[in-house]
Amino acid sequence: MATLLRKAARVSLSGSLLSAGGRPGRLYALSYFGSNSRNSSTSSKVKVDLDNSSGIAVVKFQGPPVNSMGMDFLTEMAIGLDKLELDKNCRGIILTSAVPKVFSAGLDIMDMYGKTLEHYELFWRSVQDLWLKLYSSSKIMIAAINGASPAGGCLMALSCDYRILADNPRYKIGLNEAQLGIVAPFWFKDSMVNTVGYRIAEESIQFGVMYSPADALKIGLVDQVVPEDKVLSTAKEKMEKWFDIPDHARQISKSMMRKPTIDRMLANRETDIKNFVGFISKDSIQKSLEMYMAMLKMKKG
Ligand SMILES: CCCCCCC/C=C/C(=O)SCCNC(=O)CCNC(=O)[C@H](O)C(C)(C)COP(=O)(O)OP(=O)(O)OC[C@H]1O[C@@H](n2cnc3c(N)ncnc32)[C@H](O)[C@@H]1OP(=O)(O)O
Image (cartoon, rainbow, N blue to C red; front, side, top):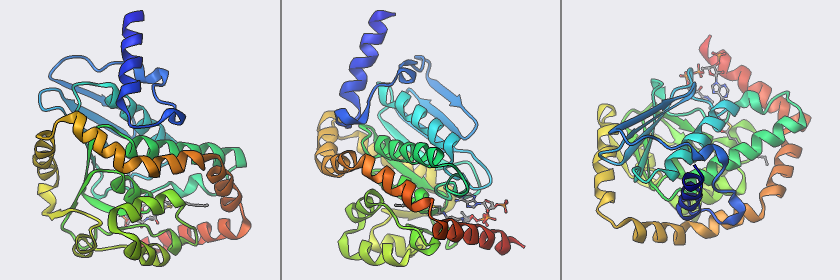
């Protein structure tokens, strides 16, 4: 057992691209997947299916109605990603949704509305934690976006190395925070800038633009648009191409590209939490969120 723990700790430290401040190698990350040809784990909001023979893990969001990123989702994703990060059989991860028409509706607005300051702090730390794990993963990350992907949903896609979006004009993607009367934090903005460039991000974030697949492709927010029934198979084919690159060279290159963005977030993490808690607990912001939720419900009726 001691040998296993030492081995797991070594894998963890040499695995994720995260620098020391990112708390790699938590205890729950020590439970290994077995060595069968397929390993599955299902929790309530996330299903992880690792095919040991191909090295591809499919992480499916399964939190109806809209895969919103509440505390359960954030925790389950963090645990699933930690396990995959430690698993040498896993070389690449595909993020996708099991919920029809929605990839993820982003952060769960109910976790940002009418809660205590302690809750907001814990929630925001968990959101940061998930982004750090996604953005700093040493694995190849591909987003197979098979539904709408606003705000936090878009952020998860932006954290991947490659994005494939289903060709359905209803499946819009973007950082729409401004439309809710809230502000995308600097690391959401950095992820957008790193993907589409400064000028497009500047306009996109101020207007809170939600892009159609055609427009998302045009600005480079996604890399490919394919028929809906081909999203997952295309992601798997693309993954095989990424597998042609030796892992160590790709990982170091990825780290070189992403480290400044990750370090900036780690250096400002506590201030960012304070900002979030102060901002989200303002009466005016709470009112905006309340109105936005009412608008979502009205749209239905
Ligand atoms: C310094 C301070 C910084 C603050 C930064 C905060 C950063 C925030 C990031 C975020 O991610 S905020 C969340 C932004 N998300 C959205 O704006 C998406 C809103 N949802 C939609 O546009 C649509 O729901 C959809 C995803 C396009 C799906 O449409 P569909 O018609 O299929 O479903 P609906 O009928 O709209 O929704 C069903 C059900 O789900 C509820 N819901 C939707 N989104 C959320 C959400 N993000 N959180 C919580 N709940 C959500 C919706 O109200 C419906 O509820 P019921 O009426 O069934 O009770």
